[in-house]
Length: 130
Image 1: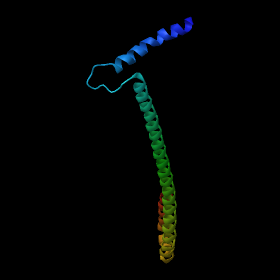
Image 2: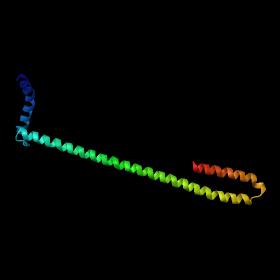
Image 3: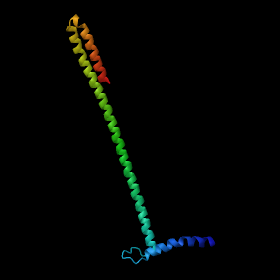
């Protein structure tokens, strides 16, 4: 019994506060009794939980959309890289026949120049591949 009286005394200050809020003489008096004040508090708490849950759902959807966008961007970059490699490969195959035609029509004095041209084209092809 003594423990219950101590608990009651401990919580008395909270009850006094709630009674003061309910019995205030303000023009904006909203609550008729402590129960209506508690009900309002519970309604606000539930609404806060609902809003927090909705915000978490929205944040999750935003994260999912960002992940889908990132994946799509990665896929497009991979596709672009493959297309660039194909384009460079096509350019190399076009350059080689032209070079062979010119080198076959050149005379023996241009053999040194042809070697130099070959090295330049190889260097250019290497740079394209990089």
